[in-house]
Length: 325
Image 1 (cartoon, rainbow, N blue to C red):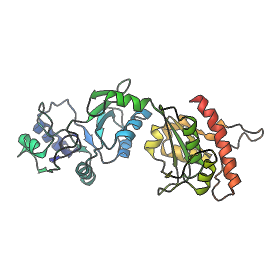
Image 2 (image 1 turned 180 degrees about the horizontal axis):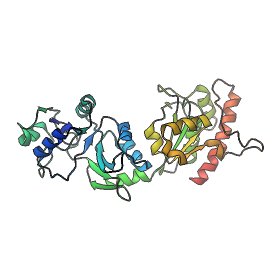
Image 3 (image 1 turned 120 degrees about the horizontal axis):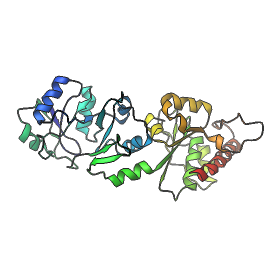
Image 4 (image 1 turned 90 degrees about the horizontal axis):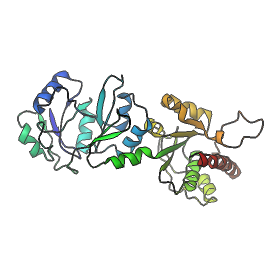
């Protein structure tokens, strides 16, 4: 049993998969048998192993607020029960769960019915002599329990409000997310992202992102891409490549890839999003006889004219996408 700090309140942790430990935790907390414990995980991607829930709303929310003061209630992987999951933004809590090598049952460090403690000393008033270790991380930064959002209802609903409100939740999950994917996230997907952002600059309800299937380090857009976009009045000089992740794919309402190979790579990562993945060139005007040629070739290493042609194809497709969005 470990008392530890988070950014919200102090928690009381033990191995979630250890029946004996959970029984002791329930006894210490004086918690009713039917009331479950929330679980602390070490990083957002861990949720993919724990739940069967695949709707974009969940992944939009955790991408926005994790690590942070948000607990989500989701169906478990087998669809037989529910789990309350959170990733803490506190260095001590995140290191504790990472080094423990287990899922951490982590309710607040107080007897049931009493106020959650915001200092280690407050926690020990209830629990001194009942726990094995107390980690003193000073006063909790936020001082209120995490917001709990239930994804097992017809629509995501805040069941306990903390610093994140129902209004915040609704604003995030109602926002459309569009993700462009290429290989290095240095040319084609960058062109698409910046062009669409320009065309939808007044749409606060749309989030536009780009990523690459072959990104291992964050690098800038290629010099040729920066020059090509500059002709359109767009500045991509500060762009930094990012890798495609499961979370990015699952939060997207629409994933637009440059080639059939990219589509295959995306669906290998997240097969459940198949109906949301399209080749970008499907939205462009296709010359007669070229209906099967739906790849947008990589311009890297080619003359500037190739970049201009690539931009023209992408722009044509995006002009049609704007009308749909």
